[in-house]
Length: 353
Image 1 (cartoon, rainbow, N blue to C red):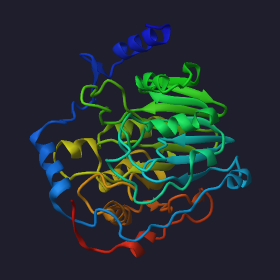
Image 2 (cartoon, rainbow, N blue to C red):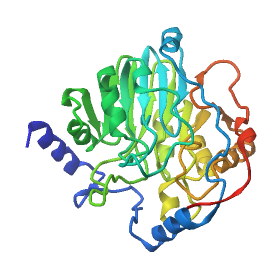
Image 3 (tube, rainbow, N blue to C red):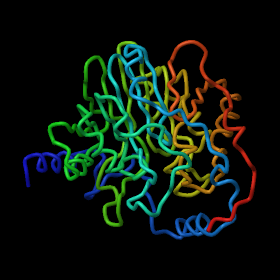
């Protein structure tokens, strides 16, 4: 075992999130991957009649090209949603890439698993140089090997939750480029501070590694702006603590899709309304919805998450930004709030095969 491996093992064992050799949630919720509940949902997902699990009309995609990065105002806060939870942020002269998944499937296999509704708006080769890559957790729709390997030479620093560094090292990433953080730990880069903050979720890339790696949300604190990245999480009172400590946030990027309204899945995946409440708890100003309109990963129609969030936001006077995939958005002037998805709804009952 190398010194890096020894240090990692010691930190993981001493973490306040670790119990009996695995990471745990602060509210005691745990994933039940082999339960009757999971089996019933899986049967419905594969064999049930489903309403609009994916769009039948091609969604709008803004293809990103290298020359756009050259023209981008690096000092101004801007971002591009790359689909699902992948995000490219420019903030105080740094570029931050979050949960990059640029391949066709969110799966350990190239031939089966959730497939994108639309192509990625950018390839690894078209990306600019990246100061920091942030990873929230180890699931395949947030951490994808071929993307990480492809962008490695462009990246200065990978900042990840405890345990994920071992994965990156196995994929050929130099350990000197990897920083692993426990909750409430911080890494500074230029004028930015990257704080690993709590989330209620779980980790697993196979059948026998459940919760062997930590998961987190991220609070990015700059001199001029503050941003929050939810990753995947169930709703819990810890968001209030993050808001008290690091808020108010100029913008929150929050997961809204792939939820259930009941059971363990609900405990680990917020509904759109809970995401709206999370934004309030965080003392957020602008809310950008993520984790929707890219993969079919739950039983709801593909457009339901955004419509439920819009309804809640109107009730609670929350200001949304609703970008199309690949669109470059600046945090200045009037927020982009048009309901572009309405043109792509079909309202058909579709039999999953």
